[in-house]
Length: 267
Image (cartoon, rainbow, N blue to C red; front, side, top):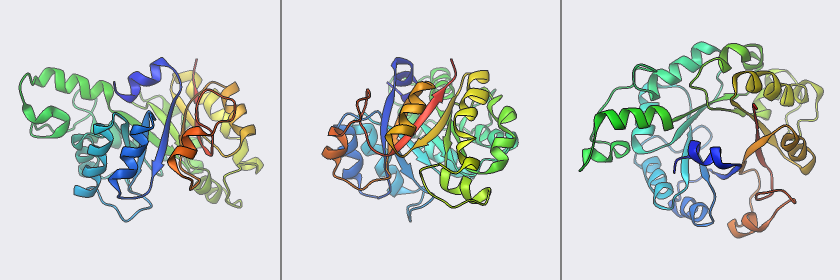
């Protein structure tokens, strides 16, 4: 079951991984999380064999791999989904044109212009039962496009960005967003310039276009507010604690606690 299918059944939870150690990804999968957030933007990893190993570890343990890229390079995006990533998280997306470049790389026609080859993991290496029609349809339906809202330009262009039918969720980056509007950076998001775009983003953009608008939550008050507005998924990764401890901790909600990220789903 891919992540989009999991999300239809209810809230989903994941862990951010900033290391090339495949065992960390396997631990996340073995603990029963729904997705793992693999990072190329703020780590020395590249989109080569090292990332492929992490994606394989995720798939082996049944946790959906999402990869945050360093940019919107078309070849890198295509290779990531061919390796088996279920979605790409692209930083510093600012306009609808930026989104279209992402879609062009990871979706096959008629949605995008992704090139095709059956000798890739996503296609099962063209093994028994392979069907081009089923492969293309499955990839177009299941591959997630997740732009990052971490610049004031995204908020200014949110209507045009969320109008794209291929945008599945939005990842809010509070640190870079704070920098873009000239306020002190921190995860609490209590500065009015940052706080004002949290819930309104979900209510205005996600509700109108029935997408997920992501909201980073660093304490129970923010998580509770996000849940009141329809929070559907969370990702952990801002604290350094043992995996079993992350798994056990909770805040009375319906999933693991800890600092993370909550989405606001349009109803």
